[in-house]
Image 1: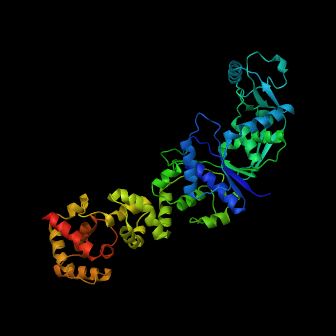
Image 2: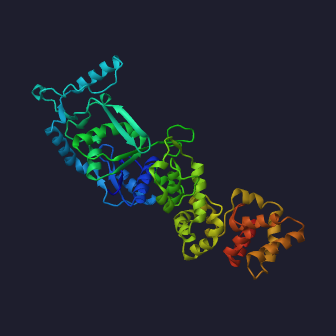
Image 3: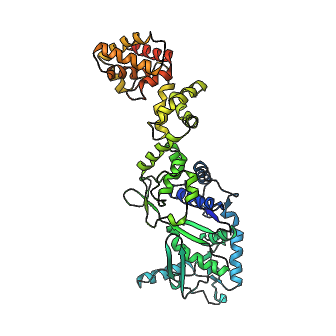
Length: 469
């Protein structure tokens, strides 16, 4: 039987990190086995489901590169199919109508709590004659669950997990208004979509016992289950927004590459020996469920950022130029034209060595494209007080005579000039850096001069000296 996995988010918010990892594990497992990966939007909660959330899930998945193999399924559109299954169970005596009022259920729960008993439905309508039904009370339909024995889950991550059936009550399948419950819809959809492996967070493990009983009642094959431990923050607490539980689009906006986030999420709870850098093609080759640990993993933005720096350095220069161009256009106040893109491509090998995110990369590249005259930042402006401006003015006269505008030639000229004045090279290079970049931090300044070219470099120096009077 071909492997079929699914990712089934509820469209009530963004595609958060935990959901993204679940999607990744399902995608990798399907790709590893040459199977199918499908997307199901579980939008049965109509009050909380939004189109914006659906769009965010689609966008997040596409940005992460987790493509699906069939048209997405929207669960709400299948409500009539879900109800059809319940009515078949009713006909077979495997489900029943429950006419308990809200007041009765609340009283029942209160009595159980007072007696120190587990709070669960007591089955009072399970074998009762429907002729006793009170007038004007629309019934829910409940599964006639197994009462003896155990339900056993042979989980691919958690191992064998058991629960006594007398701990499980008769769950509601159809609400009083005829709408299906989540527990019903999930089982029917997984069966109809031929899902072979359900890979999801271990917060769903308790649901699995009930769902298995429904599979049995319907006479359907039960898929394999793999419940993944949840992600915690660096402090071991449940992951929250303060730890980085943001949407996938937030990480895109913060300048992370999708391949870096995939690699990082893969290593959150799964391992292959001591490998840390795992390209996607290797991840597909190596991924298995046995590599998933049973302990919660800890999300660490610093580790993600360092990993992203590795992928930036390995990334194609043209691709990086295209990725930072929109950010640069906003920063410098004008679009990146062909000439600007050419400068960025030439500068990229030096720029990407020092950046860890696309935001840092764009920030460090902006000086190449800024309109003249440059505005100096506070540190650069302070640097130009005193003798630095005089040093720059004198060295500018030397540079004006240089025709062979090569990096090594420019550095040699600066060294000779520094020696002739009895100063360190940095006392020449730093005023140059301020004039050419507007900052005290940049790639090697003679590399910058080469990329800017002779006319632009001399023009920027002249701008600064003129501004200083």
